[in-house]
Image (cartoon, rainbow, N blue to C red; front, side):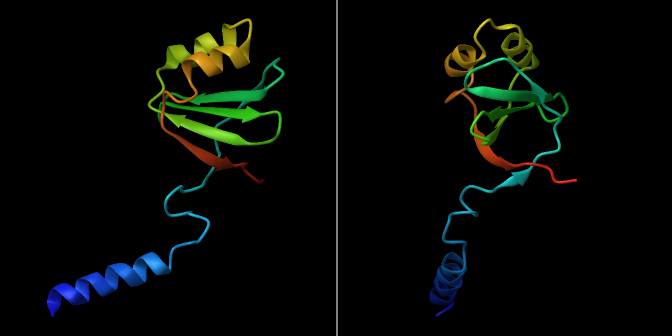
Amino acid sequence: MQRNTGLIVIAIALLTLDPAGAAEHPQITSRIARQPVHSQALAAVGYSKRLRALEVEFVNGAIYRYSNVPPEIYRDLLGAPSKAQFYDANVRGRFPSVHVKPHRS
């Protein structure tokens, strides 16, 4: 009976999750300063050395935080002639990411 009780508790916990998948894809609020960049796809980028996190804000307003990013990736992104091409080749799909809500003052 104890095993069934544990399964029931897990099932109830799963049923109470946000249907939009918030538990699967947690959303965080940004506090990393981003600087505008000249790009047709990227609006701004920022980096936290402490978190080793790169934030990319797209021209459509979406913001994503990439974790475990070495600082040289951020430095090279800022210096790249095409920010979008550098992002596609060196960031997208290469680091874990989460959607970020903008910081509201």
